[in-house]
Amino acid sequence: MDEITSADLLYDAGDAKPGSDTWKKLAAEAMANVLGQHYFSEVWHNVQRVEFLCLPKTYGLSRSGHKVVLEFTLSLAEPP
Image: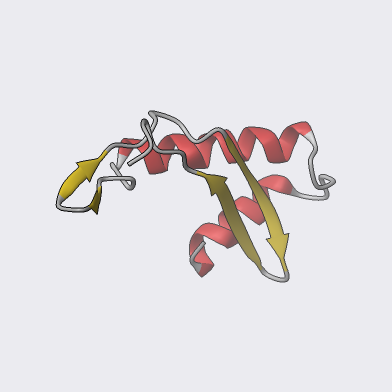
């Protein structure tokens, strides 16, 4: 995440432990924002558009120094 977003999320997380309900809630909010902005738009394989599932199967936020990292696993709707 960028510095401003990271600072905001780290403020909201406070002293919460990694994997806590606080971090899970913040991760869900971040993922909702990403999905709302159509971040996962499209990918092409062999001149055909390949679609993603509507929601990543796994996702989470973590702290890395003074930054927040959003990690996720994005699956294809069907194998190419």
